[in-house]
Image (cartoon, rainbow, N blue to C red):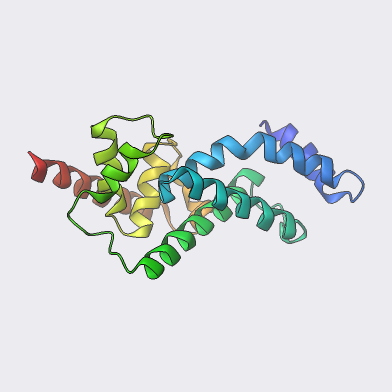
Length: 183
């Protein structure tokens, strides 16, 4: 969405008479992009859809809180990232399962998921990513899969570019080590 389109959308979102139609346009414009952001964090298709629905519910209920000091896409990414991380934390607490299990559980789950279109290497990459701490996992996903600039990530995650670069490189090293140990 161009800057002009986003400004027009924001004007429509602030107007009570055009808000609903504008929000429907926002959902159509950002659903796929946000789905993949969420999916890379929560991994499961159905869980990603549930989290995405929560993202849009939260965005709708907090529209008046958006002060337009960043792009709407940045705001939505921030909500999606936080909702995804919260979901994963709650899921871990409920299941009392550590993401550091060495049984290949995540790779097997992904390969059995009918919506997963990757091969064994892609599943193993997702397993390696899932073993990262939340922040490193989020930074790696945003940089590697979304090719997001550190300046944009800094706005989404509310941290310095230097810290993000360090997190990314540490995450990349851990993923490299994960694959090296599998050789």
